[in-house]
Image 1 (tube, rainbow, N blue to C red):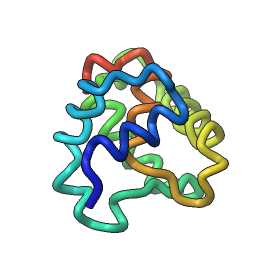
Image 2: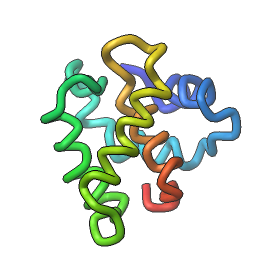
Image 3: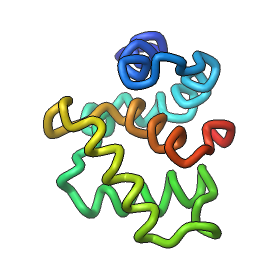
Image 4: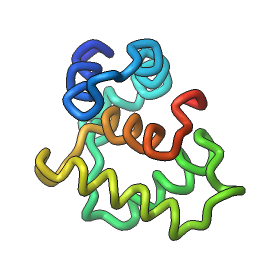
Amino acid sequence: MADHQEHLDKIRSYDSGADEEVVKKLWSRLRLSMQNRDAQTVACSDKAELEHIRDGYCKKTLDLGDKHSDEEIMGVLQNVCQTMSGDGGRKSRMTFYYLVAKETGTLEKI
């Protein structure tokens, strides 16, 4: 299993100024679930998975539910999917979650 540094390198391929402390916090939050190989990636083609991310991570962790509609949040998720389209069908969950927080201006909530 990778450590936060490996994920930081991947995240920095999208955001060269990514804060290592934020990545460490995200790694701390996700590391147990990341032991499951399937949980290490996000399948952008799976609507149910994106809805799960919207309802869990986005609404609860990033606190987007009160200020953003479901459609707006799904739009952010689709934007991140597009940004990461060069990664193939499954995207790194760490990178995906970081980019969602960055796009919504909520990195401090990780």
